[in-house]
Length: 204
Image (cartoon, rainbow, N blue to C red):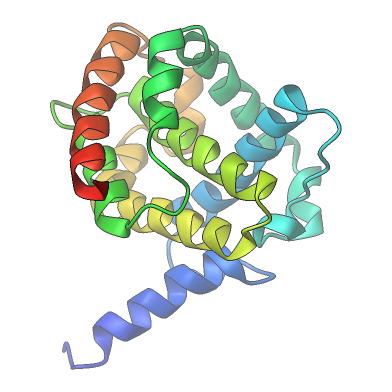
């Protein structure tokens, strides 16, 4: 039976998974999502700025997360899909207009727009890519508290909106069996333009 403390307990679990030394969660999909997101961020940072050293611990994870070969395989697949996103200069510019210190409702608006007309692995990667860009901004500005907040938002969004879909694909490993890249870049570019305009109006 639900009680007045249910919402708080759920939030606590999400935040511990995002910011603590271990992912304390009741859903394996969300646990894996946290580890994969951190792995994705670390690999993208390494490519974009080799001089920057970021570890799983820096992002609220555990040292052993970097040693899991299955996690590494999924991260590698996420990065392959992300190559299409990284080649789109317009998309990169538009995503950069959303600042790392944005409000939660702005982030959630972007995330919901990405999946507005369906879910596929390309759009899941786009969510990770958006989070990465914001986290990278925060890393370069030494705003580590913002990083924890962004990771928490991503996990909350996955839990509430796409974890059931990921489970239907057989978990994150399903990314190897069905990769949907079609129309991802053009759709996300259009969405990013709309959201960037909304964000610009709110901050003026």
